[in-house]
Image 1: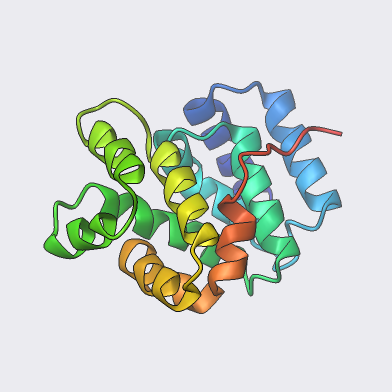
Image 2 (image 1 turned 120 degrees about the horizontal axis):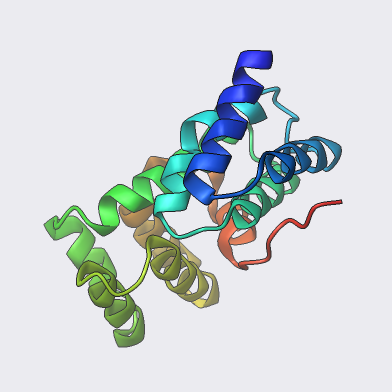
Length: 176
């Protein structure tokens, strides 16, 4: 669908500051690497590119997250994007539930989150720290409970291993 490709490319250019050539290269490479498995890559990028840019990811990192989600067997790309949308909302919602969940993580993770709340850091910084800690926990039942508290029910839907695969690295998808 030309309109979805155009909207997606425009959002990549506008929000990530990439050229039209880079935007189209990301789409082509993404399609070649299986990101469009559910036939919704263009629509999802059109919808979620602004959010991922706001969270502090580069366009290539965003595509890397989608690629790792696809390879981890995520049902559809909307789940990949929704789990991050929920995390972004919760990291700044000021709720007791978020504070309690963050309080179950290390002081270092809490400090990354508190610095973010002060305007020093990004959601991507918080996500990397949180996911690294959840993945490293001996008690994966507790890790999943904290994950659901911070990422919402999509964490449960995707299951921890898929979220860890998507966000356990900042590796960016490179063009080509």
